Length: 86
Ligand SMILES: [Zn+2]
Image (cartoon, rainbow, N blue to C red; front, side, top):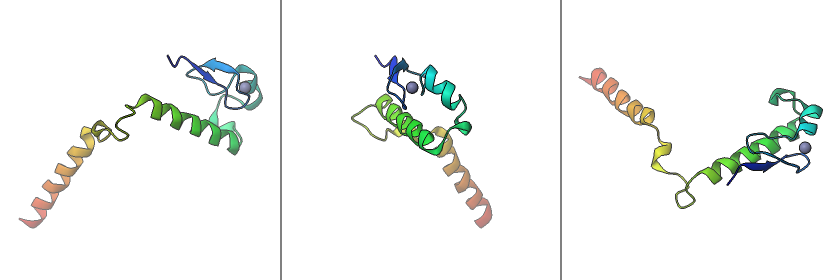
């Protein structure tokens, strides 16, 4: 289970969805915009790690990462080109 995580500042155990523990949140604020650059960096690294953990470890880039929007965009471009050249 990944229901627990660590505060990126002090390493205290916290609920998974949070980045900071209560004490550090009081210190630095809830909003990312209020954080110093080093804290934003640490949080981003943690989010990246979490995202990697959520993926199937056997397939780093599953095909589902290419959304249907992406495929639709390709056919849309093709249609536009057809109109232009016919
Ligand atoms: Zn903390």
